[in-house]
Image (cartoon, rainbow, N blue to C red; front, side, top):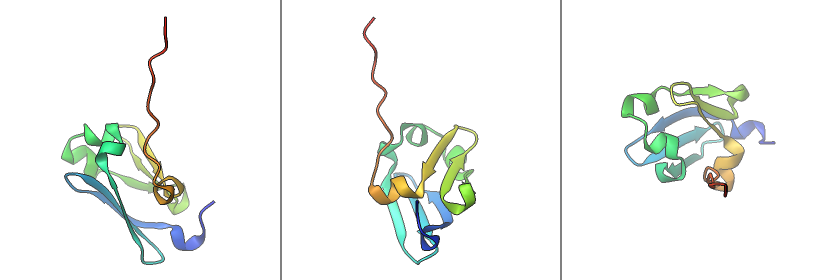
Amino acid sequence: MANPGERIMRASCNEDSVVVELADGRTLSAPLAWYPRLLHATPQQRSSCVIAGGGYGIHWPEIDEDLSVDGLLRGAPAPRVSAKAS
């Protein structure tokens, strides 16, 4: 679990990244390409995020996407969905 300094204070998306400011002063950035739902969302959908999980997560209600501070700190992209053989 993240420590109190790793709580998310602000989150936003620009045209190619998600940017998160933490309570301890760090700024994290990850490419939208790592998160297909964010990448394919409209700018308006990407701008409507809420800080969730007591400050340890971000949720985008319109596209049902969630990111955790733990995953961002690890540099973990969204899991790839693999097609199952029939």
